[in-house]
Image (cartoon, rainbow, N blue to C red; front, side):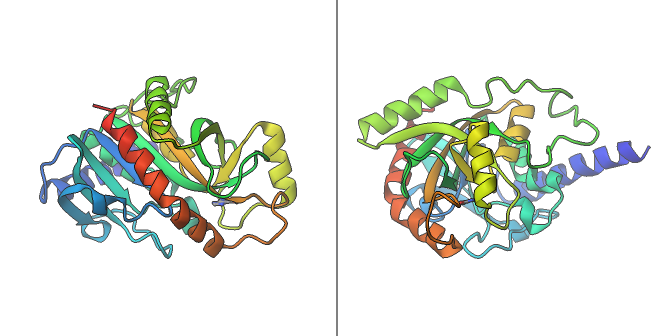
Length: 280
Ligand code: HPA
């Protein structure tokens, strides 16, 4: 009985958020874009149709991290209708994992078929440096709670979703072509999510490297799992902002990450726009 209550509470909450948004706009996005560190002002360059602060949406988890002020921005990238998340919710802020992925599910219910995830990460692959853009080809979720734990939301997807092709091959190819056409050096690799908020220890980074990870961060994977569950087509690009602990000789700081993300932002935005244009 308790489980049934939990199920309807989670789904009802998403539906309440949907109703709040639908009171403001009937815009139907095709692509949902999660803007990571440094990309916060991406939406300044798009044709904006509507904006909604997260705080105006009943029940929506509001981010507390500096630099992650939150709102949905609806508009067009070229002719492609998009919804941008300016600011995401991180597990380390203390939310239930179901709340962390609520925005992803909400964007699916708003009509988005494609999810473009972006983030800032630490580089594990020794050939990466600050400013490297890495397309995410797969992920490791083992060290964060699975957002699908709990009674299955049957209205969204199946109990045991396949995870063999989370990152859509066709979208990946379009991003590769967009990078090439714009002379942007784009690397590829596996992203591992840890909970944060502390950065990793050098031993944890060595472990992640042995496990096959190329970049590490505190977001994205749980969003990809939830999006895959509800049948969205997913792609992601990570901006490697620092070398991960133990690979870098200097202590890591949030400021350093923000600075590197800001420096890489122009090429990241260019890649994002060029890619989304190909998603028609
Ligand atoms: N570790 C985890 N998350 C990060 C890092 C890192 O080194 N850099 C940017 N986000």
